Length: 115
Image (cartoon, rainbow, N blue to C red; front, side, top):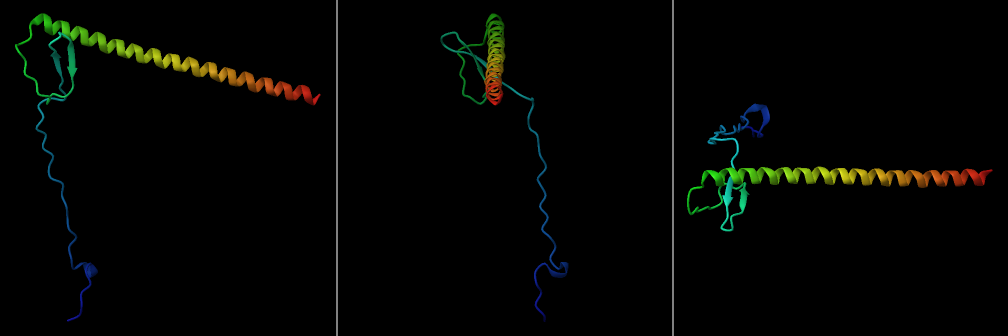
């Protein structure tokens, strides 16, 4: 009997790998926790698997206060980022103007020497 080379004459069927079906067990798109620490500070916790043992249920005023405080903190952070970006942009423009002025001065010097 002649030797059969593997993969020749389609004698060996290609192995087919199928991905298992993706099962989505999630109930929500995203989640986070708002915690009140022992000092009364509001903490936005993105890891909902963090072990938390509350001493009691939150009051309505704590919920409202924590949400307002966290919203203000986020807005302050966004404002600070915008201000920092604007400052960097102005600094870059000033540096470009200074570079342009130096180049213009060098060109004028070269032109005046050439005369």
